[in-house]
Amino acid sequence: MTTNGSPYASHTDAETAEMLSIIGADSEAALFDIPESVRFDESFGIESQSEQAVRSSIDRTLRENDDLVEFLGRGHYDHYIPSMVDHLSARSEFLTSYTQYQPEIAQGFLQALFEYQSMIVELTGLEIANCSMYDAATALGEAATLAIRIRSVDGTQILIPERLHDGRRRTLENYLGGHDVEIETYPMNDGTADVEALAGQLDEKTLLVYAETPTVRGAIEERLETIGELTASNDALFVIGSDPVALSILERPASVGADVVIGDAATLGLSAAYGMGTGLFACREEFLRQVPGRLVGVSEDASGTRAYTLTLQTREQHIRRERATSNICTNQAWVALRTAMHIAWLGPDGLVSLADSCVSRTRELASRIDEIRGVKAPVNDRHHFREFVAHTDQPAAAVAADLESGGYAVHVVGEHEIQICTTETNEHAIDGFVETLREAAR
Image 1 (spheres, one colour):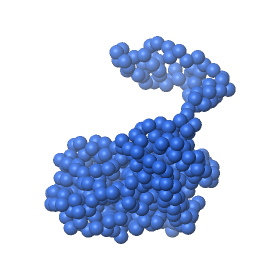
Image 2 (image 1 turned 30 degrees about the vertical axis):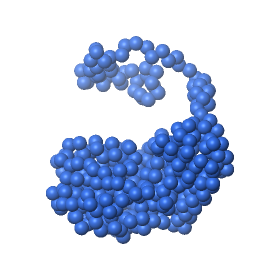
Image 3 (image 1 turned 90 degrees about the vertical axis):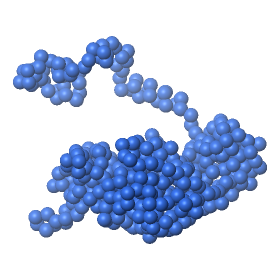
C-alpha cells in the first residue's frame, strides 16, 4: 500500500500519523530544517507522463548523440564484456548487496571478493590486495598516504612522471594537501622514464617514486627494475601503475621491486562509459595493517567448514578516526565482482591472448598509419600496449575534427600529436579509420 503518491513508502496514513505523534512532529516536512535562503518553493515544471511517453522522450534525446567509433584511451579502455558477466552480476543476491557485514548470509559474495583479491595477488606478485578503492587516481593517493605513515626515512619528496593523466595528478595533489610533502616530476625520454635524470633527483628526501607501465602514452616502461633498485637504494616506496590485462604479460611488479601496485581493475568487467572504475591496490605483506579499505579473509566456522569474512576494516567508519588508514567508504564490491567474473571467464590463456592482441593489433595499426603521408606513428621508439601517439604534419586539432566528421574520435595530446587506442571492440572499424585519417592528414 502506498500513500502520498509515493511507491516507495509502504506506510498507511494512520501509521505515518502515529510515528509523527511519537516523535512529536506535526508533519513529515517538520523533520527537515531547510533555511529559507536555499529553500525551493517553486514548481519544476515537469509534467507527469506515462512510462511509454518517458521512454520515447529519452530515446529521441539519445538519438541526438553523435554516433562515433571511439579510438580513445588514456586510462579508459573498452574491452568486450561477456554476457555472462552482465547476467550473473545482475542476480539479486549480488546487485542488492552492500558491504558484506554479515558473513553468515554473504558467503557467496565474500568468496567472489576473496577470489578477486587472489587474482590481483597472482598478477602483481604482491601478497596483499584489497577490493575497495574508487579508481586508479584515489588508489595512487592512498599509496602516497601509506608511504607517509610507514616512511622509514624523513622524506618529503614524491616523484611522479612528467606525463601523467591529469585526473591522477590532481587527485594526488588533493590527497596530499594537508601533508608536509612536495610533488615533483621526473622527465620522460621517448615515452618512458628518463632513468638517468630520475637517478639525479633521488636522494634522502625522496619518500615515493611512481612509474607506470604502460605509460599514459601507451609505451611499455622497459627499465622498471632499474627504477626499483634506485628507489630501494634511497629507502623510498616504489609504486607501479598498471592494469590486469597488461599485468598478464608484463613482468610482475614484485619481481622488479614494487612495494605497491595501483591501477584500474575495471579494465575488465566494466564498460568505459561514464569514466567509472574500481581502484586496483596491492602491496607487500609488511604493509598489511596500513592497507586502506577492507580485506576479505578465509577461515573456518564452528563446524570446521571453510568460511569467508571481512578480516580487516581500517576505514574511519569502522574504527577510531585517529587509527583509520582511509576515509574511503563507498563499497566497490560489485564492480570488483564483475572484474573477477571476467577474468575467470577468460582464464589464464584467454587473458594472455587478450593482452597479446593489445600488443600486436596496436603495432599493426601504427604500421599502417605510418605509411600515410603527413603522419608518423608511433612517435616513440618503444613497444606499445593498446595505444600510441602519432605525429601529424597538419594541426592535430584539425585532423581530429576531420576524423570526427568522418565518425571517429581520437585524443588530441599536442599541437601536432594525436593519441590512438585500439582494442577488439573497435577492430572492425580500423580500415575505415585509416582511410579517413589518410584524407584528414592531407
